[in-house]
Length: 235
Image (spheres, rainbow, N blue to C red):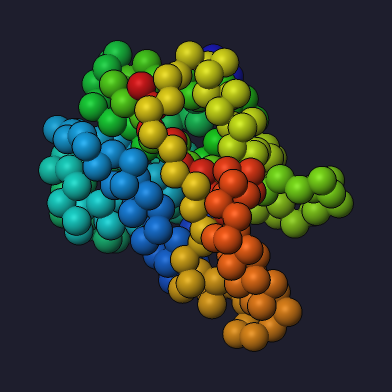
């Protein structure tokens, strides 16, 4: 089984700290809301987040009593330390894993969540097949970074560890080719709070972002082509 390379492991081991907490908390609010929305017709006795980071999504799910038994799997030592600090109410266990092999039996979990992880993974089908093995349902969310000049933005995305670029259709193809059935989809924008954190109010990027949102709302078809995020419930 392929394991994550040592250089990448070291990068993620030192990535998380109190300095990044506010940004990650803001992002987690919408990510958790997206998970709850696509799963609104289902109930789960247990849930595991794969690539749980510093636990902000799990903290939000716990706060909303989405599931009483939460588990986490993560490769980063610094993320695990940040997660432990939160003392998340319904979090039962945190495990460290190598990025591909999960230490759980088949169908151990009702739901596995993998939010903003697949874009970082060198061999996504290996990890996704493993997630499928250990769970009955799955929620994936990815950022939609694609543009026709995305190669010119390589330095930007690589700095965030984004080594895979998707459109909703390309991510659907990845899911289907890995044996998943798609049950629910959500095309999303970043929240106003995240946009305010990213861009100075009334700067060119701030105005451009809000102009795009207005245009996309007027032409809903565009949301299926180039949203900010794409969330999928699978089985």
